[in-house]
Length: 271
Length: 233
Ligand SMILES: C[S@@+](CC[C@H](N)C(=O)[O-])C[C@H]1O[C@@H](n2cnc3c(N)ncnc32)[C@H](O)[C@@H]1O
Image (cartoon, rainbow over all chains, first blue to last red; front, side, top):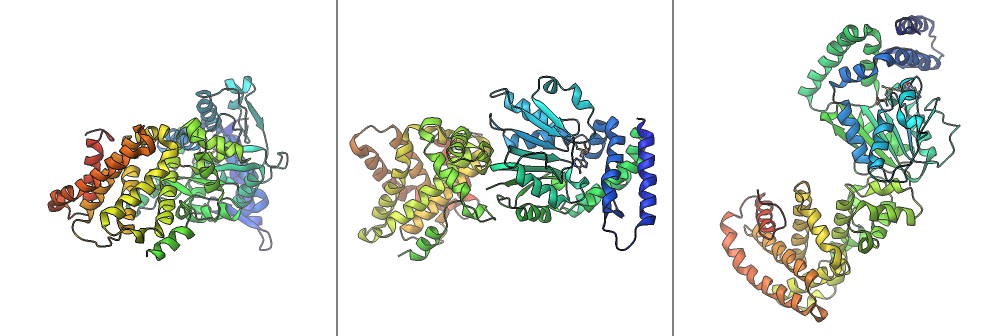
């Protein structure tokens, strides 16, 4: 499908839906727009099927290229044990799964990763997928009913949870599918706490990124959505509390800020 | 004596302060991991083996932050708390501060004995540049606690000097002990006596520069460096 078409239809849909919203419908946020909850999922899908082809370019633009380092850090922090099985939700181009297997290959090879997301054609190219070490499934992070309780050692979701309608449900599902002692790790854009840096970052987010989106991907709307969705997502402490509320044990404050809080890694253990 | 501190220590298992959600699983894992150290070292492997023994996912090893270092830190916290509890009802039998110091140091050193064959690995880990802050923090806690238990609660100008001198005496003795093959470690205890007696002199020597809050860290760093613990800059 031509990505250009997918985006404009997603945008048209969102406009229509806003008009149709009535007070008794449950609504949620789509970027800064308020839309009926039932529609957010399809709107998000529109954004991602559209940006998928320019995916790495998008990540690079949004993070000024640092997202690779953040992902490396996530895996170093995780230090996968040789026998660990990973569920990587919102897998995108498989960056996390790939780094996970690379880390394990320095030790004992032969583990399997279930990378799981929505519109990831590029996964097919991965050598691990050909080797059967990565399994791939489509579903919604809020409802993983096709995955057994207590079946994974580690759960990751990188730059995915803020697109979900009910992040609390996502975290509860993560808790369910993890084995006792299993580890939940979320890498997500967060809040820059230093006010001076925060205002610079705001400028970059609201002016530079959408403009880059326009220039690189010819799609300003989707990039605007991505930036706005970051602002709507709960700040570090609130999200850490959501993780504890789902039953996880956190160490210390439960998160680590990277690059002044541009992104944060939240961690929880299932005990 | 020291009953407030004792109660505080007894009520607070090591590392508790790090955990905001009440859970003792992390302590259970770390304690069990200590039983693996003689076989697998001060490593992530020890922590993973403990998780597996206890029926947890191997990924629970993350409760020991930065792998082996977290295990070393856990051990040092535990050992210091055990020491505090052990010496509390016997300290009144000693009169002089030096005798008390000696008794407390011996009690603490005995905690390291079960790991004597592997302790140089922990020391090497603590000596890595990125772990020096942990080493300094741990030695600071050790020296403060020992001085406190020995009855010195003053916060005088020579406080930092006294702590660094004690930490240095302790570290040197611990290294000596791990190599000592004399019966009942008699040589080690003699070595410790000499270090404690020397301390008075070291104390006076460094008084002049002991007025800064960061002085302790700098003193200790230099002392550790002179013992080959940390690389010279
Ligand atoms: C920004 S990408 C992140 C991709 C990858 N984890 C990375 O870090 O590069 C977000 C991914 O989340 C997926 N996604 C969006 N909503 C989702 C939902 N409700 N459940 C599962 N995945 C979802 C999208 O398909 C997209 O692949």
